[in-house]
Amino acid sequence: MHKFLSLCLLLLLFLLTIPTHAQRSLGETYKTALGVKFYPTSVTFKQAVAGQNAVEAIVAFWEEGARYILLYEVHHRIEGIDGLRWYVGPGVHISDYYNGYYGGNKYLGLDGVIGIDWKIKKTPFNVSLDWQPSFDFGGGKDFTWKFGGLSLRYALR
Image 1 (cartoon, rainbow, N blue to C red):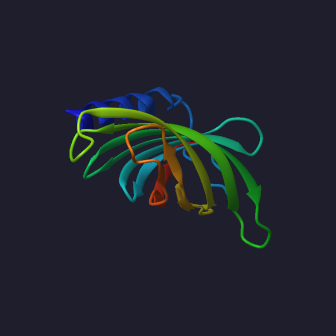
Image 2: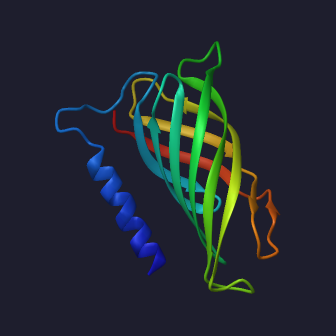
């Protein structure tokens, strides 16, 4: 049920961000992108906000439950390859453990992220690779280094 509700929420976000006259991004930058992230299996939605900054919402699923993540990312250009940027930023999450030892518990936490992001020129695709360490408050989980991974997104505009 958690997965179904999360996917419905992301589908709604997707539909709300598509302007009726917008074309997908074929340049080296993008404003809005939706896709998947691997480890853990996640749905990712990224929206440019101010200048080179972006907000990324992630819904992650793994064997113990789900995690709802919101990151603020500051992007910096990497010279030499069109569309390649590195980024860093803070974030927050809610962990919803519905399996295992912590089953039925929800915890708030803090996140950090560092990674690289590449908008492939002349295509509507974006690829990123990042590391996302986090800290849960309560429940004995504390610091987790295992989140992050490879994201494949479709640039909507």
